[in-house]
Structures are given as C-alpha cells and as structure tokens.
Image (cartoon, rainbow, N blue to C red; front, side):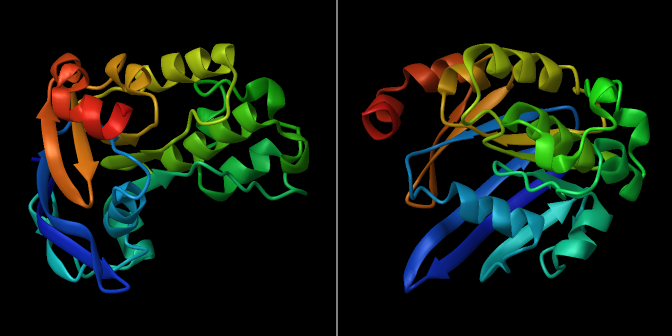
Length: 221
C-alpha cells in the first residue's frame, strides 16, 4: 500500500476538524476527495503534507511511519502538493522555476515549453496552475496531493487540465485529488470519498458515490 492513514485526528478551537479518519491508497490509484465547506479536506491535506501535526493516529508511506515528519522531510519522503492558489516568483521565468527543482524536463510534457521564457508575473491562472503541477511532479513524489487545481478555470481550460492530469497516471504514483465538482473527479478517479465534519461518510466507486443519497443530502444539498 502506498499510503495508509489510520485513526487520524486534529482539533481546532476545541473542535475535531479531522475525526478518527482511516483510509488507504495503492500505488497507481487515484482517490477523489469531496465534501462541503468545513468538512476537513484542507486540514487533511495539511496533515498529509506535514504543514500541520496530527494529534492522533498515524500516516504510513509505503509502510514507513511519517506522522512525526515536518513539511520538508515529508517532501523528501515522497509527498508533494499542488496548491489551488499558485504563487510563482514574479521575476523568474517558467524555466527558472523548474530549474530550481530540477524539473526542466517537464516543460514539454506539461505544455510549458512555449512559455519557458515567460515571467511568473505574466502567467494567467491556467498556466500558473500547470507550472505549480510541474513543480510538484519535479519532486518525484510517491503521493501527489491535488488541491482544487481546476477552481476558477474556464470550461476549455478545465478540460485541458483534466486531460493533462489524467495523462500522469503511473503505477508508482498515488493521487489524492480535492475538487468541488464531482463530475470532474468521476472522469479520472478510481474511488471517491466524502468527508463531513472530519469523518469519512461514504467511499466507493465514483458513480455509486455520486448517486448515494447521503452524498446528495450533504454535498449537493
């Protein structure tokens, strides 16, 4: 198993934001994570990435306990994150950004070659998101966390990004993808998991989860 999460918990202001959460993801598997605002999705990503420390439970990466590792050590262990709000350096080119993380070979696969001389300050949202994704992939992760990378994109930009991300599938990479639109995740992911108040409420095949009455009630309203 690539990633195992066992009885993970985290409190904020006395409230359990992630509550006794357990799940696992195999190498080559894509897990879509859905839930209403405040469900605990961002906190879970912070716990997996190492920007927050768990207050209970364990995180295992290929059987290794990484629960106590911080952000940098977690990246070195093999967990990388692509953020919803990319913040490229304004005065660096696209090539410069990827050179910093040893990822210039990703310019063509990520559709960034024609933008290689463009400054970060001049990138639109869709291009900045592709650069963010390339930077995460340059870290050679075993687990990739995609944090609402489709948010704010136009219809054509969303479809282009979905196609690009779908092409990243390989047996040694597990992906956990948070996105607002269930239909986007259903197009790519092997399983969906619904979080509500920090707990796993529904998990299974995308079509079955999307049609589940509890998902309709909690997530779709």
